[in-house]
Image (cartoon, rainbow, N blue to C red; front, side, top):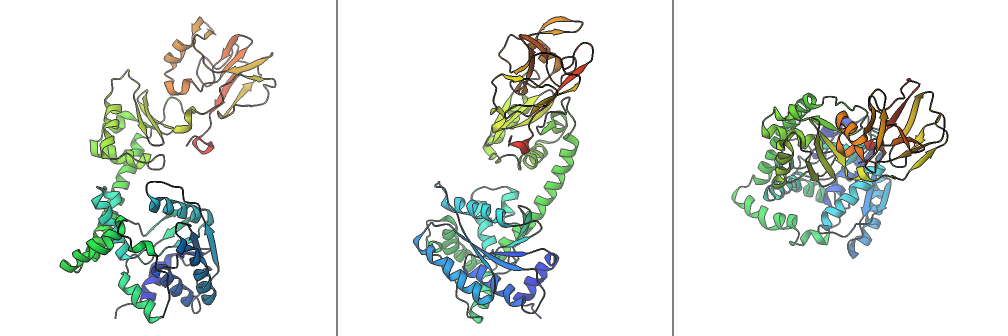
Length: 439
């Protein structure tokens, strides 16, 4: 016997029955209306987590002003609380993408720890997504299309209707005499997805009746393949995640030698996985920047500019620098109470271990030409000392220097430069982490 729509839905949702709450992304359209009605009806007989609905009003078209009232009326009839969230969609080349980003930012703010956001995308949506991305030249991750579940803020997003066709949803809606919103923009074939939906997919299904199911099934296969690529990337990144000579430097880094031991395809796979939470990834044409960085001469200090930062190569490692790395306050600071840590605006803090030096202290940043008295070595040029230490060049502009009057006393964290000759004290610098605003 063929399982009912309700049975399919409850089977998909079974692992989340102990979630603190289920929130339904409720646009008022067919898909979310059926999802809301199914769950609200089932909640009358089964013990489900608390249900609520969220309607995001984008304000992009006049017709949308009436939708919150429609959604409120249906939620009231079903006994489901509704939140209406109004968002500002910034202007840009793709209003669809901007609206989607604004919508999911709102969802992320509202979903609590362990809670579930349920959205109404179905199998036809999945087929359209795959075809759309195929025509844009997407790779395996893109062609895997919409995942059935993914993290969202402190909770999780789940698409429980992804294995169900639009025709099944329409049948249920008509049987239950549901009324839903028809977004006028969905008929506008100037939008690529609408063109595929109204002009391309009907031709495909006329020739191949199972085209939608086949496309959705291919997306599942590619999702599985992407999972295997992710596992391989984690293995390769574990081998490349070796401690550098500067463990106090809170920047993501990888061993270049470990990456170069991999094939080029595995290098790109590992780097995609590593860079994904840090920056928007480059397209195929811009991966040549990685080859240039990797193959530069050993004494070079190449960099690869990406959308949200830079990848540097130094000392046998590649380092990720977020775009905000150079944003800090580099004016001189006095340190009247060296027994207490000194906060460096935008640059972490300094502190002493041992007994701090007596006298008026200040902190400055490099200007060039600094000279330092090194125990047992006499006066030395700071630039040469930093070269000897192997400190990456991109750190040197942020490096706080300790002065007493006009004398350069110490350079934090670097062996032989961070302490006094008698060993009474040592200077430590704690740079800001990415969580404190470097990314």
